[in-house]
Structure formats: C-alpha cells, structure tokens
Length: 332
Image (cartoon, rainbow, N blue to C red; front, side, top):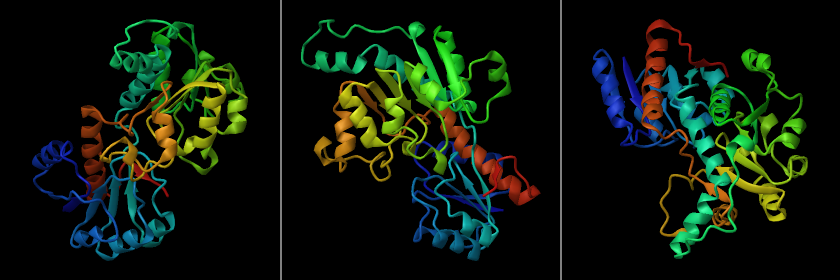
C-alpha cells in the first residue's frame, strides 16, 4: 500500500513518522505542499491520499486523483464543506474525516476566551504595556453568575457544558437534534431566539452548513440579551462580520472571541510584515478592540489533537484500502 500525505507541517511530522514505523507494510510519503491542481500530479502510483487544508478540493483535483488511481481521500479535519461533492460521486472516491480529534481542545479555548472576556484581560494587558497598573473601570464579572448559551451540542458543545457547569454557571442549549442525556437534564430551550434572549454568553459549535450561514446576523443580534458576549470557535461563516461590528459599536454585543473568521483563508496562519500589512480592514477593526479576542484558528492546535488528526486520518485511509470500510467514512 502507498499513501501520500499532503500539507504536513513540522509539528505533524513526528506523528506521521511514528505511524509509519508501526505500519512497515505501508509506504508513506510526506509532502509539505497543499493538495491543489499542481501538486496533485504527485499522487500518481499512490492508493490513498491524506490532506488538510482550507483551500477547496476542486473537481479538477478530484478528477486527477481518480485518474491517477487514488481510491481514498482522508481529511485530517472534521469539515467537508470545501469538497466538490459531485466530483467525489462521479469518480467513486471514498472520503473520510476525523470527526473527534479532541473535543476538549476546542472546548477549552472557548471557555478560556469566556473567562478572558469576563475578566477584561485584554484591556489590562493593554493598560500594563502603557505603565498603567490601575484597576478601574475594568471591574469583572464571575462565571458562576452567567447564563451560558450553547448553540449545537455535538461532542465539542457537550464538553463545553461539562466545563462551564464546573464553574457553577447556568447552562442552556439549542440543537435541532438534541442529545438524549442533555435533554433529560433539561438544559435545552425550544428555539434559537430563546437561546439568544437568555444568554449572557453565547458560544457557537455548529457545522458550516448552508442553513447555518450567517446564523449570527443583525436580526439575531437584535434578539439577544443586551451586553451579550459571543464566542466562535467553530466556523467563520456562522457570523456575519459586518453585523457583529455593528453590534459591538452599538453596545448590544459587549465582547466577542473569534478563533475563526469568514474570510480567514489566506490570512490565518500567515506571517505578515506588520499589522498594517494584514489585507483585511474588518479583521483589523476587530483585532484593535479591547473587547474582542482574535486567534488565528488555533483551537485545534494542541499536541493531542494534532497527533490524533494525523494518525486517525492515516488509520481511516488504510482501513478502507485493506478492509473496504472505516467508521470515519463520510457520505457526500
């Protein structure tokens, strides 16, 4: 068996090599380039491909994979919204993802950001850099006094429930497909509007489906509890950035934490010469605010998660190649 892994970063290499050592029957090639219309030529002679990227898996790429004899495409991430589904079906490609590489990694960053917003940590850091070590007017709120609203209660959302309950916060949630255990606990509200109206903090953990595009928009923000704080460590497309900026300007939204951004491709995980060189005025607007936290899509970026993303993807690829099945296969 021959598998080629694209876009392998330095931090992923040890886990790739560890897996290859455990599977001497498989020839594993490491490729630092992302999978695109140019680099796809390197797949000739390989049975499977492992990849992770924000760039789309276009019809041209998928057609070439199939013509080169590739049978399986295994993603090292959850989302499959950037794959040309028709090309997958047309070429009879098998696709897998890693649906749960580390729910705790995402959940812990979301809760960390909640605490940072409540304690005004960014404001204090800014003041301290100017030699200002005073307290006022940045008096904090306590997590145990908050109602935390969780939109979507998959693995990550449920982990957030556990963590914030440990702080003593009241937790409510909305999900069109409720979890039976959480339903018994009585934390669900009936509609998103109820979630918006009751939450002091709203954290998003929904997938990037068409139905969720700009879930948080002007209309939704208007229905929210005045002074709400919004956390997004899920998908950038869930939030209408212009609407969020308007909500922050009006004070309806008192703070936000964004680990994802709707126009992040080509910007996040890129080193620019300086702040002014960042080619996105809306993002810079948000980054300059003391009540907005921006991280460049790093919620997943823990040692546990990165190891699992690499090795689970390789496991799934090999499983389909050798047995014809994998519990991580995605039906597109």
